[in-house]
Image 1 (cartoon, helix red, strand yellow):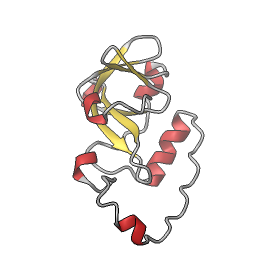
Image 2 (image 1 turned 45 degrees about the vertical axis):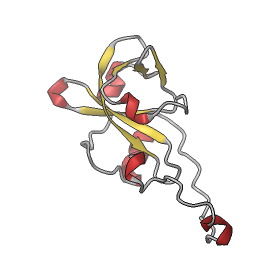
Image 3 (image 1 turned 180 degrees about the vertical axis):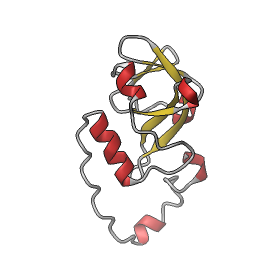
Image 4 (image 1 turned 90 degrees about the vertical axis):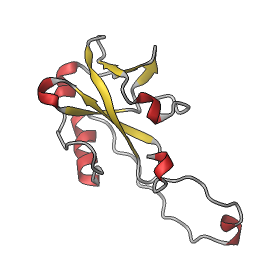
Length: 132
């Protein structure tokens, strides 16, 4: 997905499958724990008020809507983890397998912070409420 899109702007937008069929409305956006990059969107499908998780990486944002490159049936059959909670690593792996996506490379271990790191001030990160 385009990296210059503010994930908050996706909330409430319509989502469409690869054939242009409406699958629902984006309910929440989930960020990667390690990078803070938007990784998943929970789309309210309307079917029993269920949210289906869709990957954002292969999706596109155009005409003020999210276009997911998968068929509606696959999206609606995605594992249901509920919304409003953190996705565990095991849940993310289940989603990667469901969409037949390659698992991401493990994050490099963090290096100890030095004086130079502290001199630059606060940088918004995954624990910053502004970026959720």
